[in-house]
Image (cartoon, rainbow, N blue to C red; front, side):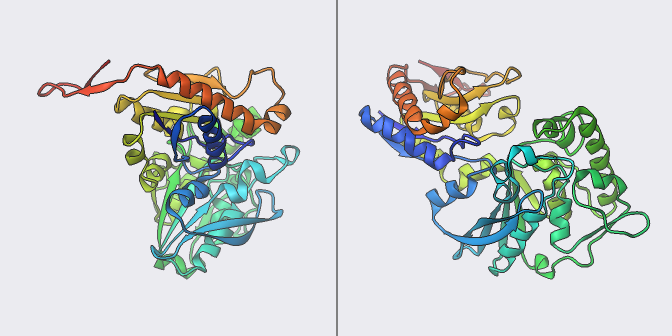
Length: 386
C-alpha cells in the first residue's frame, strides 16, 4: 500500500512539512510506501507547503508583529513565474507573540503591509497573500496604512492602530497608496469562508478565539461595520471570504484583489489530486478540528477528495472541539496523544507521537475495504460500493 501523507500544521506545535516527515518516519518503519504532500489553507506553513511541492526561493524580510515588535519573516519568490507569496502568519500569526501580550482590540496588520511592500521590491507581476491564523481583527486597516493609505477621523486626524480604532473612521484616503500596486495582480488565499460582520464573521466568531471578551467582540463588530460602510463608498468589501484573518481580506478586496478559498488553490498548485489518484490511501491531520473545519480547511478538503475517489482515509488530530461539525462520512480518527497528557510533553515528543500514530493509521487503512466508483445511471448520482 502506498499512502499519501498530507497533514496541515499543528498550530503552535509543528508546521505541516515537518509533521509530514514525522509521519513518514513512522510509516517507513512499519514497511509502508508513501508520498509526502503537506497541505495548507493560507495559514501558518503555507509557504513551506508550496515550496516543498513547487520550489522557489525564500527571501528574507523584516516586519513587525501585531503589536509593533520588529521580527524577521520570509517571502516565497517564484522568479520564472514573476510571483511572490506573502504569508500573513509570518507577521501576525500565533507564533509571533507571547499570549500574555495579546490584545486583539489593539492588534494591527501593519506588518503584513510591510511584507507586501517587500514583495513589490522583487519586481513581480503577481503577489499572492495567504490568510489564516491571525491574531488581528482590524479589517486589514494596518495593511492599508503600511501601503500608504490614510484612515481618518471626522476631524481629519489619522486613526490609531487596531480594530477598535475603526469605530472613529470617517474617511479612507487612498491617494498615497504605493503606485507599484497598480502594476501587479493581487490574489488572496483565504483559510475560511466567513463574512466580515455578523454572527459567523471576523469579530463575533473569530475574535473570541483570539482572546476578546464578549464586550470587546461587540465593540469590534461595530468598528468593522463602520469600516465596511466607509470602504464601501469606494468598492464593496463584504464578500463571502472578507472575514478571513480578522477581516484582512476586506482590505485586499478594496485594493482589487481576487479572493479564493486557500485550501483549494494550494491543493491545485501542489498537484494534490494527481498525488491522491496515484496512491492507495490518505493520512491527513491538524491541531484542532472544529466548526470551521468544514468551511474550507485543508484537512477536511483532503478527506472529502479521498472519499470522492473511494480511497480509505485517516486523520490524526491534536483535539476536536465540542462544536465540531461532523463529516458526512467516517474516516478513521486518532489523536496525537491522550487529552490528559500535558501540552509541554506533547510538544517535546511530537515527532515520535506522530510517527507512532501514522504507523497505526497505516495498519488500519491496510485492512479497510477498497471503495470504487460505480458509473452513475443517466441523470443519477454517483454511487460508491465496496
